[in-house]
Amino acid sequence: MTETARIVEIRELSVPLKGQVANAVVNFAEHDVSLVAVMSNVMRNGKPVVGLGFNSIGRFAQGGLLNRRFIPRVLAAMPDSLGGGPNGGPDPAKVRAVAMRNEKPGGHGDRAAAVAALELAVWDLAAKLGDEPAWVTMARAYGTTPHRDGSPVYAAGGYYYDGMSKGSLAEELAGYLDQGFTSVKMKIGGASLAEDTARIEEAIGMLGGADRVAVDANGRFDRAEALSWGRHLDGYGLRWLEEMGDPLDYGVHAALVAEIDTAIATGENLFSRQDVRNLLAFGAPRPGKDIFQMDAGLSYGLGEYAGMIADLESAGHRREQVMPHGGHLINLHIVTALGLGGCEAYPKVFVPFGGYAPQCRLQDGRISPSDAPGFGLEQKVDLQPEIERILA
Image (cartoon, rainbow, N blue to C red; front, side):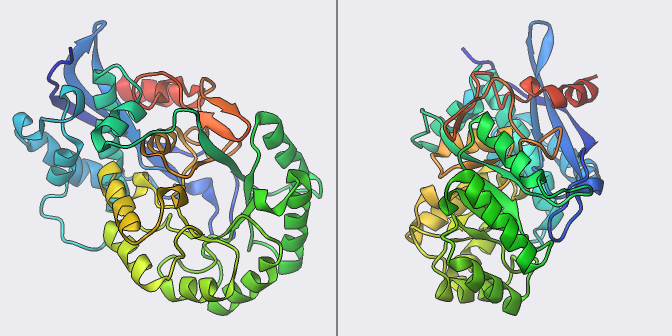
């Protein structure tokens, strides 16, 4: 039997990412992430049950927004007004609604990530109250058919960094194959077309086929460059071309899909349902082909994210086309719960949040979460010191 839980305290800790990697646009050396702890009144084994969440990878920590606006609003709400959630916990949708009180529509940037960290921590709390993995709680809440034999996963790498040598990429990719990955994504646009073409051809040779290699320009190109690179790469039969132009320039996306046969991927920098509706209306994504990479940790949490998927399906797309950005445990549980097309993994970068816990089972390009309650963040060795800090 679960106990009725109330939120008694919320904490935020800004945690820097470790590593000196870059894509074609951003160096991640200065990036950090907000770790959020939602403390409940329920005690087990002499300790409060605590929900943990964070705002994905690739942006910045949101301590200012969380501590000045969103956390105070939630703590000021009457506890009973937040109840009715899974397993007797707070309702994530009600928590989000209270956090967003008096916020104007539009302007989705950093606040979408701040609210997401808070909402996802409430999901972790709900799963822990039920003593079950988060994917179980989420699948039951949304009535979805989860992956029970693992979710497809690819290794994201091929970043640019100081000290790269001619054999660095091959060594990196060989390591991913040894771990059980069968497909990869690599960065492009940080070198010349000729240099990146050589890197892509090396990756294809290592993986045994172009359909196992995706490339990501991180919005590096203007329209002319995106089309030029797209035409050049189209003949390889790559798995997909990702963010070839500015994420909000839906015209670039429409121009690419009109000319390029290769699947086009985008969405990691779309933070609301309306952004996704605009992509559907003006970006001309192809049902059954193009890839959607929105990230719950950057877009107000699971509730908004599930709404995005509903909009995609209403427009004729399949959830198998949805492969969220952000290779970490939270998205693994979301992909598993909602039966999505697959997830990303960061085996060597974005420590301590990137990658999965040792208890997760990776084999033949599929990965399964562990049986730990919640998201299982406590099992991630690199993250344990930060969890201890926020709970101290």
